[in-house]
Image (cartoon, rainbow, N blue to C red):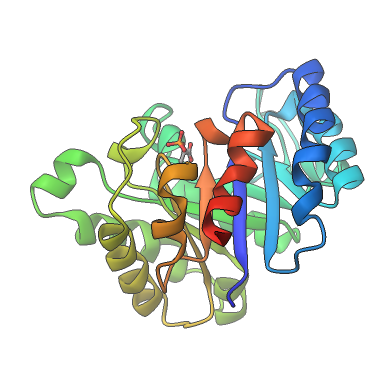
Length: 248
Ligand code: PEP
């Protein structure tokens, strides 16, 4: 049985009070799977809620991380948050290259690659997101776009670093739309990614409207090691339901 990674991206949601409430409600829902070695749960919180997430994650035995970082350790970068600041909370992971960072905030492949390298250098595990827009898919450019996004990190990381990254294939057209990729579409890209990365053992997640009702078909695919979940991760019941449905 493969290990399933169930990671929740809270985006710009969850105040400190809401984070505390999340973990109060999370404990009883998660209890049935707490000792399941086939599951790794992680939550990715906004910077201001990281300390609260640290407390809740530690109490429940789940991992947690930030949703972004800047690659410089300190200095005149108004509004940015450094890796040492994030690590101070106890965070072990960081989401990088999410499509909302790439498309709304204009993060380039090079910037995402610099952040990925800096995170690895500091011992943070990057959850590296990549994926095509609807236009790119419909014009037949899905694999060109993803080759460009992945190559930006593959060309600067050592084989050991490449192995430490958690990859998350997230087609932009499936994020927050309720319209997931089919399990065949997701499997096709994850299998292709594994070959491009040239390491059969890397962890590759699928993200894009994952919920209880589509969890089993997506997570049962051979090259999909888990899910990066947005909307359904905001409530413990809908978040954990994803693994419960997979296990049925
Ligand atoms: C995400 O934000 O990474 C995501 C996959 O969102 P959603 O599950 O809401 O589509």
